[in-house]
Image (cartoon, rainbow, N blue to C red; front, top):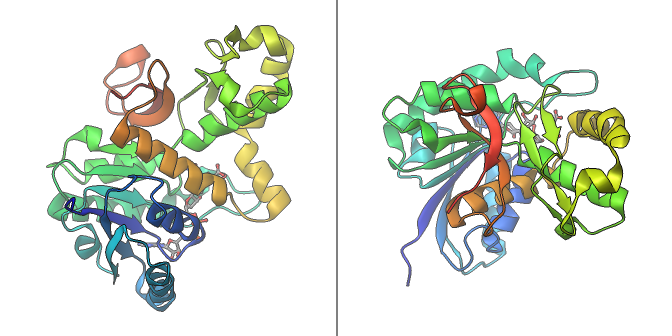
Length: 286
Ligand code: NAD
Ligand code: LMR
């Protein structure tokens, strides 16, 4: 029997977690590797969280070796191997993600300190809560005893949006697309880049033309989150949980041979980006 690893999830009674947690216990992150779950919520949502924990137990997953609900971040993150920082307020219609900074920044400084105190030294932390790049920077700066490379922010949803929209335009399945890139921030300043992308091995720009790429595609990817909020009335949930699993699975198990994905990581100065910024790059993991 493999020793269980410990996965912590913040905002665990929220919408994204309600999709993420049930995919975790279905084995989509770690295959047959068993794990325990430390679920974190604010005190006023602990009762709702206990309901989620009941449902997780009721799935009778052979992978789940224990679930605990916490309102203390240090308790939730104790000996954590893998952490999803989802808990933060989402934006509503007409807001930019940076409007969330004031309310969400305090959460990530406290949780950075708790990770510093309690998590495994090789913990892998994915920040989903917005504004994700800035929150990852705040958490990392509050965890000086952990290596900076342990902190990442999620631009995988933007990457998947780029792949999905390109595939739709070409009338091909997403599996035909390789080597898309999202540079920068999980915000409207991000740059979805198709200059290396291929569709069935052909250059993507030969398939779709530069006019569509420059005049429609880039803005469509940059604005996709706002468009989902406009149409659905709430921010993305299922696609966000899917991206969080894809990001963490590639980080833990490696990207497919010869392919890359997009992840916001601490810049080492590559491509002229200021060292220390949490910035989305094309990333290969071996
Ligand atoms: P939600 O409001 O449904 O859930 C958030 C949960 O976090 C709530 O249950 C809340 O009680 C909890 N929470 C708040 N403060 C907390 C704290 N200090 N500790 C622990 N839990 C806390 O929101 P959601 O739809 O699940 O979205 C969560 C976040 O993810 C939002 O900030 C949203 O904008 C962001 N998001 C990011 C991406 C991305 O691509 N990076 C995609 C979608 C959503
Ligand atoms: C998204 O991109 O869907 C999320 O960041 C939610 C949002 O506010 O757009």
